[in-house]
Amino acid sequence: MSVPLTLLGLLEREPSHGYDLKRDYDTYFGRGKPLPYGQVYATLSRLARDGKAIAGPAEHGEGPDRKRYTITEAGIADVGHWLAEPAPPEPHLQTVLFAKVVLALMLGRPAAGYLDAQRAAHLQRMRELTELKRRGEVVDTLLADYGLYHLEADLRWIDHTAARLDVLGREVRQ
Amino acid sequence: MSAIIEARGVVKSFGPTPALRGATIAVGQGEILAVMGPSGSGKSTLLHCLAGILVPDRGEVWFGGQRLDSLRENRRSELRRDRFGFVFQFGQLVPELTAEENVALPLLLGGTRRKPALAEARPWFGRLGLDGLEDRRSGELSGGQAQRVALARGLIGRPEVLFADEPTGSLDSVSGELVMNLLTATAREQASTVILVTHDARVAAYADREVVVRDGTVSSLTGATP
Image (tube, rainbow over all chains, first blue to last red; front, side):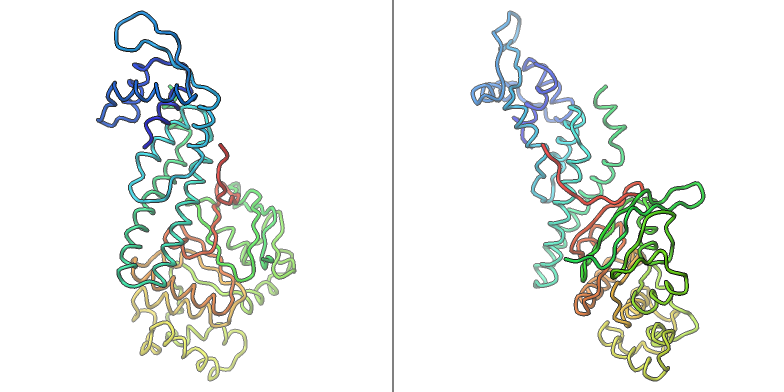
């Protein structure tokens, strides 16, 4: 999962301090693995250096960095491209698929369309693996089956999530 | 690829319940198309309308340049017998007939005499790995064997379109895979178009293309724009 793009996505909601971004990241995406402060501030500095975010003036207060960051047009475009681009259909994608859906719902972006695109990419890969099985040796078949069953599990999750987007959207935006 | 069969804005309700709300789809000659979608989305109703089993309330169904939905029932029935093949989730073999007679059934119904019809049915047993089972009745076949007999029955008339509704739905994964390999290989060999209704992505992966039926309309899986 891409930490910089996820933080950028959180920044698209509203200008935020590093502390707020870390708190929201840990709440939605941390899953028991909080993001270290150092990584948050280093990432924000890089995003500012690359023109994806603008750092406001330093504010008085406690903590190492009291700057408020604002996303730029280039940053918004990066988030949009990342969300819309299907992830390579490989096993164990849950963290990136999950992050994309939650962010898309949070930002009011077309999560259903993203899920459809991912679904199409998964099915295309499943077609390739099925063809490989048809032509391949036993070992190829076993490996292809492994991929097929994992992709199928992802697809079930995609279908299940797509059917519940309204409810999920309401909860995430609360 | 030119379309051999098409639904244009098909609407179909059962009493007050709408099943299709303007379904549009075109299937190319020789194409294997998977129709996916959640339970109750209307995918089986779409298949039945395309096959002329059901008549739409509104919209049109075309097959080979001919309007199908406005034909009389007896003409649609002939068309189904002579130019379409069917495989359903449960083989629906006739229990009183032997496996060989079941395979030959479409030919017998089409007026072929018994002896040549059975002679034509016999090679299918070797092709589908069913050697020695010709004289068994459906109760004496395993689920996978019965489904392969049903597949042979669906394909023996070299149908222009084979309609398959959850053809592996009652089978374990290994038998299902065997049925799908045979179905797709034979359909390609005969240049039959296949319309395959399934909720199983591994089955859909045998198709050239898939569409999803949602709330009675058909969507292609196109990508999102940023």
